[in-house]
Length: 570
Image (tube, rainbow, N blue to C red; front, side, top):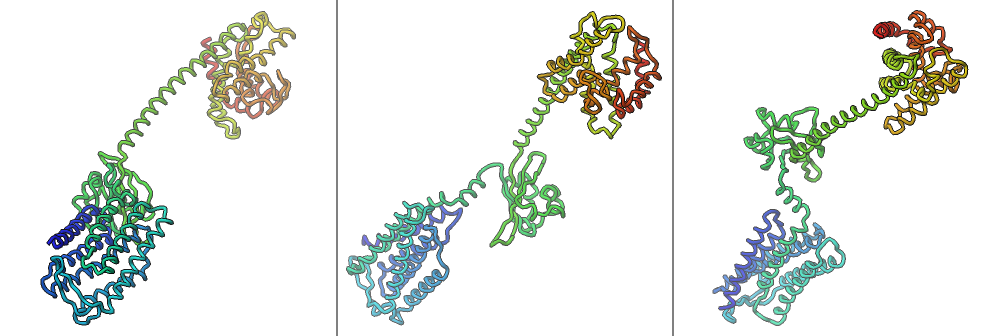
């Protein structure tokens, strides 16, 4: 009676394990595991039916179920073992074993009439249970050969994997090997000793428990499944699936938040004309925006509430396109952060620009103040600094019109105008007796006065040494140093000739001389504009650069207008 109850319990345990396996693997059911659990349940039902049989027909029916269940149980056990060991089950070998199993099942099912599997069956009662006894037929040899082939194959595969496979848990394989060996022994030993109690239901239930444990644990090793789980559970991600004809296959909750109209579109339908937002944002009908060409490339989707990054992924089956999966990633917070950064940078740039402008203006004012202070010591050049600076500005506007001088750019002219007030800064080093002399200089005094060019270059260099604008420093130093050089080499201090003279110094020379001619000095009366421009014209190629000089003459109307207004005020 106890054995009868035990076999019933073992069947129900198989049923519970089958149900439990299906539940814990609902995300990704492995068909080999599922069939293994089902055939084990069928086999255990057959064993329970056999020991409860009250007739030969019932016993034969239970025996048939137990054999058929066992045949397919060990076949799919081999499938599971191969899968666990990370190996491939060769298709010819799989087909051979399947045909072999089906053949044996047919032999067993027809044994009552053929006596090929066993013959002269009869039942007896032993230990309170029904036992089916019979003489083995020739078909039993094929059954034992089948069992031996599969069990030995499974054991060898596991042993080989333990020693060669690095990507498989060795602990799990070792436990699996023990289960296979123990199961084989519990079948062979009772059969050899003639023990009528069948231990296979116990082995099957134990094996199912092991595979339940493995199937629950194996998900941790399943990278694609883990990735899928992560993508499904993390927030801010969504998906829309289309077939290759762009018919909707489905979407998730996040996709509905981005495109609420998706909720009203039927599965296997094209996006209707009324869903303009979807058509526009997903480039659904853009002839110049081919989904195949845009695969795996990001594009931005902006709605009233969200900013989303979309990526089109191809859905392939055996390398054949069957559809598209549009991945949606919430980028709203990132865009707000970037917008905040941009606003901050804009405000900071404005603040830095304003501060820099104030510092630059202060710097320029100090330099101009120094130049005016120096000029105040010179009785002969009242207002010369301011007038030459304005003259340079007028001249620079004219020079920008001459495309044949590539060095002259708007930035060059800006720096030139800024540096002009510093051209006579070297006079600060000249003795007041000479600088403030009311008449003409003697030869010695003139030689001393000429030193202001070199001294000016040294002073300007020291003043601007720490400036970041090295181009401005270069222009200012050259103006102070070389504005008295002449085109024919007769100037001072270095007797430079032609284009050896820096361009900025050649320009400054014209404004400096012109102002000296048309302005009143303590030793002379002002000359007329006609006389001044005649002197300039006659000195082209001698004192002045002929090309630059002609440009200066071309801006005569503007210069006359300026000087008439300034000299009248003075």
